[in-house]
Structure formats: C-alpha cells, structure tokens
Image (cartoon, rainbow, N blue to C red; front, side, top):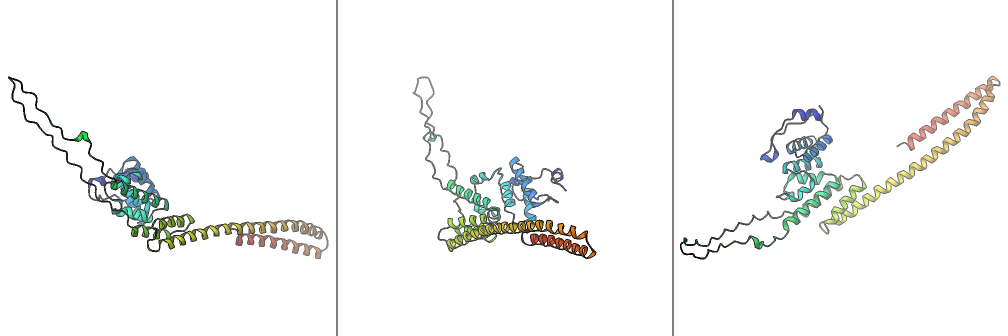
Amino acid sequence: MSIDQNMQNMGAGPSPLDGGQPAYIPVVGVETGALVKRAFLFLEDGEFYQAARYAEQALTQDPANGRAALGKLMAELGLHTEDELANVPTPLSGHPLFQTALQFGPPDQQVRLMALAQAWQARVAAPVMPQDPASAPVMLQPPTSVPGMAAPQPAVQTPNVPPAPAAAPAQPLTPEDRYASAVGLMSGATTAEEFLSAAQMFDALGMYQDARMLAWNARKSAKEITERAKNERKRKQILLAGVAGIAIVAVLGGRFFFGRASSLSRGSATASAEASNIVSDLRSMKAATLMFYADYFDR
C-alpha cells in the first residue's frame, strides 16, 4: 500500500497534545525511511497527530532510528522545527525520545541536539529582569472636596499581579550521559567523519574518566580509515597501469601472431595446425588479461 493510500484511510485522529497516549493507526507497507520523511513533512504543515503516527510506525519497524525518535518528540511537543526545542518548558534531557534521538541519530543530528540542549539550559539559567516601574501599583488620589458633592471615596490600591511561577530548575545533560552518547557513536562508527565527531564529543568532556584517551583513539581510527582509502586508490591506479600494459602487449603481439598465422594458413597442413595453435594462445592471453582485471582491479 502506498503512502497516499494510507493518507486516504488514516482519518483525522486525536491530537497527541490532547493528553495521554493516542492509539495510532498503523501504517503498513511503507519503508522506514519513507515514513520518517513523511513525518517531518507533516511537522512542517502542523499536522502533529499524523507526524506522530508515522514516526511511531517507523520506531516500531526500527526502534533504534534516531530521526524517527526526534520526529515523534517534536510531534508530541507540537513543534514545527528542531530550533523550537530550545524554547520548550520542560528539560530536554527528561524526554526518553530525546535520549534515543541523541544516542542513535546521525552525527550531525547529535551535534545539533546537544547545542539545543545547551541553549535551553542557558535560557533557563538567564537572570530575571527587574520589575518594570510602569507595572508598580497605582494609587488613586481622592479629588478635592467640593460643597454639595458626595464625600470622596478612599484611595484604592490596585492589587499586584503575582509574578509568573519560576521555571523548573535546569536539568543539564550529565557528563555520564554525554560520555555514553560519545561511546555509542564511536562503537558504531564506520567512517572517518563519524570517528571525528566522536572525538569532538570526548574533547568536550575534558578530563572526565578516559575521555582524552578515547578522543585520541577516535582520531587514530579516522586517520587509519583515510590512509586505507588513499592506499586503495593508489593500488587501483597501479593495477590499472598493469592492465593497460598487458593490453598493449596483447595488441602488439596479436598483430604479429595474426600476421604470421595468416601466412601459415596458406601453407601446408602442418603450417595450418601451427596457425591454429597461435590463435588459441592469443585467446588464452585475452582470457588471462580479463581474469587479472577481475581479480585485482574490479573490486
């Protein structure tokens, strides 16, 4: 079933912001990547229930999908973009979906989420501005007494508006959480870029546990991957040169042997047999060249 067919059958559904956990209608027959992509499109359009529904199905198919976890978190909070995470009322570290998105998301997403969490902490920790003098209570002065008029009323003091409740204390990501995220990224890294991202996360931890040693190991792994890639390119260039040389020898030898075979084929029966052997040798040379290319270059 295609995504469009699912959209026709899914209905409006309750909003995730209404409270509780709605029972999302499963989306069947759609790949995980397509589900995540459509979830973020729903977020941009403000269709948070459908975004949460598609992200939930993606997490059902792949529980370690960091992008799907981020999409479901944004849908439950009613956010259109990632930048709005810095303005949510509750700490980001308290959301299990945020931890999943931080641990299993791609490296660029992990960097963005850590920056947003730090921005949230900085916003909450900002000092409270002093009260504006214009908001001070106003005293109504009684008018001057005039004969024949009623006695003036006593001064009325407008009540102070109670200040807004203080925001919840910041719950920053602990070094233990950041260390665990960096270790998870390093253990699953397969490219030089991922190892370098892990090294940067370890550098931010300073002297915490063995963060410096792990940062050094991550950079060493990134360097080894880069060196292997360079050596592989050099090896293929050398093998290509060898194949080209064999091909040139085969062409030049073929011109000589075919010329001789043509002259021999016009002679006696013995000469014709020798010509057949030469042609067979040329075919063997061609087959050997192709096998050499397939075994050592075409990888």
